[in-house]
Length: 344
Image (cartoon, rainbow, N blue to C red; front, side, top):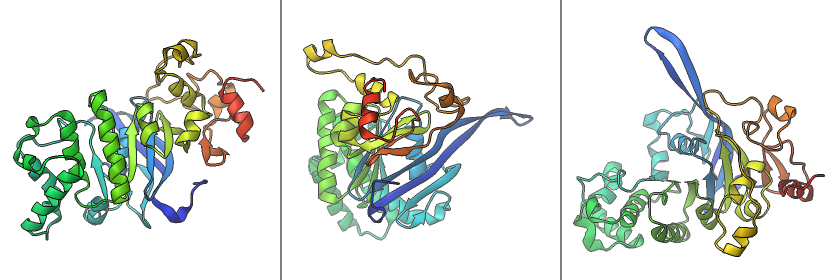
């Protein structure tokens, strides 16, 4: 994609599609298709954090599962290094799985309650095989120290830890095999606000120490702004906007992105009282029957008949700033004026 050096890319997603058939049955052909992900493309560079944000049902978690190859894509490519793993057979994914790991949303259900903390962290090393027990024990102690857990707690069960500590166990497990890419699927949404910053700071520290890349999936724009280098905004399975984090938050170009950012509360009550909020009317359409043309057209205040006829391409409107909207011109100044509600 434009705006990045292809030589530095760790992961390249191209035209990713995922459809699910629902309904019907053994003697019925009356099945329908859920359009969960449609033509999604992005890159993640070595050492980069790409934030993926959107409302519930936008396809964020589906994309995570597809990249992890928990599910097989309907179409498109997932290129890691020089290899497309989208349709690779399971037996050929061992090396890929060592390099791409996942931190799950719920630290309560993602840990086996019957296993001790040390065994949970050690499990990837056991599955990999060929690592002596002494070396595994040393590695577990090293990982627990990395994530801020006392090594003496290795024999405790998950229910003996707080939510934040459980997520640290999950993080330690995710980095056990020295992966290059970690997919963090809403890793702090189930935690208290007071703990969220600690976990985000830990992820940033580990990124610097270990050279990790992250796909950070979230619905909380404030959290994403703190950790992401670039942000992709997803709506009904399609990317609406993709830009460097500072550029996207300061100069959102897509009407949907602007509305999401405007909805984030302002800490200063005086500024909050003066803000002009842009409400998104209506509900997100069903992925069983997505709108024709731009999928946001049913809720967009700028939508026209042209928007409803053709799907807008995700194209560069300003350097490194990609937007899927025909109403945004290819001029940074003009686009910013339009995004702020000015008429040309």
